[in-house]
Amino acid sequence: MQLSGSITALATPFTAAGDIDFLAWERLLQAQLDAGTQAVVVAGSTGEAAALFDEEYDRLLRSAVELIAGRMPVLAGTGQSSTAKTILCNRRVAALGADAALVVTPPYVRPTQSGLLAHFRAVADEGALPVVLYNVPGRTGCDLLPETAGDLSLHPNIIGIKEARSDAERMQALLPLRRDGFAVLSGDDPTAVRAMLAGADGVISVASNVVPRSFRRLCDDARSGDAAAAQAMDEALAELYHFLGVESNPIPLKALLALDGIGHGLRLPLQPLSSAHAGQASRLHASIRQLEERSRSTAA
Image (tube, rainbow, N blue to C red):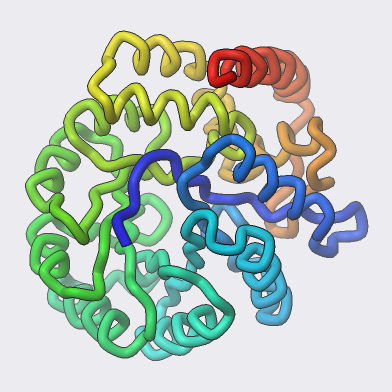
């Protein structure tokens, strides 16, 4: 499997009563398919994986696999603080039909680099699925260094890395690892164009939940080397990037999705978007719908 292009880290829509809204989930998945999204992540951090019970997680993933029916890869977020628990989670999602596992560095426990090597090798050896490494130090408290990622990239069952650090130096250090069978993916929307123009294979995106057509176009332009077109789309999305960071992810994202009728909120300890940002959400929603329509017309 060679991952590339526009990959969406899906939000999980809930009903007003707090249950998973499976009708809204199917609408979200279908919108990604219609827009040409090139892979999706189910139950990552954007999908509030930590707030899902096991039976909910399983049903969410199973429904995505059934609806997508092989038309694009389905990745499942499986990273746990324990190596043994991560392996069991990988085996479970493999049985449910996931194509690969997105495995974050073990949160909270802050392993050493040798601990990270041992962890990811064990998961890749025993977890029954291809593994995409995920480095997001701001959430986990540990940083998977490029040298460690380089060692792990040689494992035949480790197929890529999602790097959420935004500094250009980090991406430059990872790009030499790219080859058939190992993808270097941005995990930071505001710097994804820069990363792809430098040679990254694609981006695992939050923004593409609400602008999937525009994001597919942005990725196509960046990966083909059309810097002017990619940067123009990037500028058109700059306000969206900023808004998605005004409160913890996925709070702002779910406010925008709710305006599309997809979901009604979050689970504690996350709270709905504060009233101070509600006006911005409404204005931005109108502008991104126009941008998506322009992207639809251009594609047609």
